[in-house]
Length: 529
Ligand code: GDP
Image (cartoon, protein in one colour):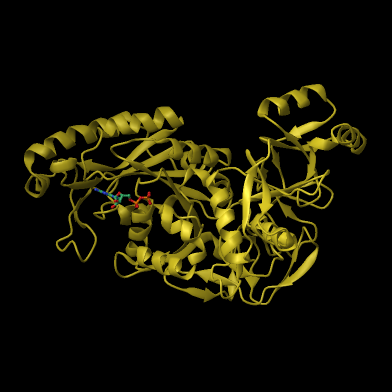
């Protein structure tokens, strides 16, 4: 069997908006030579936006709404970098993206430390024990004391920390960084425009060469700091890192290209190759799928529709989990039990899309389709296999869809289903009346839906407050659920898979119903079937 997957590193960057994720992404691509000139990621972003002006909201708000994947090679490894949208409204989408990675780089702003969104994303990583590499960015600016930052990470996230690269001065006194493992000093490149830091090997932090390169006064301070750091923190332990209990810490500057190559090198050296994925077999039996398994399998963690409005394309992003996928292979979608011939799968390279001939565990493959694939779907050669861990979350904002032109009701429903299949919204049909509800986790998504309904499906609609504030999936025996549904018909709706949900006017009411009906479980998440 193939062990090609061993050199795959599938990872994401998690951070609070503005910490430097975009800049770091660009510099990582540059360090790997996947792109030649700084500025390319932005340029590509702009081209993509120009293509997809359906997302004028993306431009107006200046945020990135789409999750994308990028594949590049460096020193014999194949890196698959998944972009997690940083805006807090998209936590659900982001959550699913994180189910598709094996490790993450956490970017922290040296002046701000751990910020709310960083923390939230970190918690998601912890749920799955995803190993985290910490990059403390912007050390070229006035920032907080390095020890202070490290202590904060260690205390707030309950992690052991091992400093790997230390800053030499900050702000106006910033001179470079020091690679503590390899005894190398990272200095500004001779020609900034051309690229990366210059590195000089030294014998130890005490090497007198450093005084000439840096200046004796700053170097004396930094020697003292590094000595303290080396004594005060645990040495790096690969197993502890891979178990998710220890994080190596790198100080650097994405903008000025300090510690970027070192970071990439260590994602290659330390981050784990694809591991086992939890799944379920036909008879509800839980199992896990080994990347070594012969049969091909993968799951859809993201669907992007209408990237190009002229072509109505729809791309499902699939994370491969086992076997060796080959183009034109027929794979079964477990949910629908239908076979899908995968004729034109694509890899997303930094500047290009490329037809996939073969893919192994860890790879991210884009599959164009016309609605056969939804978020959470499993594609496999093994009958009945369904990957777990890609739940729907109970929406907290529920709106009635009100059409400007009632004749367009059919079109609206088709559009809403297509949008729901992308995974960022959910739809509910109440059992009484002819209303149609949409539920989302973050309010920005409402603007996105309204805008896209109009631009992509030519349906003008408003999304009205409808009095409901909470949704719960019902679970229990068939007769218990039936009894509850009969007694509460005016508060029952069905999701797009036909499962009954309880609509509550408040979180409190949902809790009250739960208390009064001990035979029925009221669920805030739901695994796809
Ligand atoms: P994102 O929102 O996390 O993607 O952040 P960006 O990459 O867009 O960066 C936010 C801002 O911080 C931009 O103005 C960047 O130029 C700036 N920035 C990013 N990295 C650094 C750095 O290492 N040093 C300094 N001084 N500024 C940086």
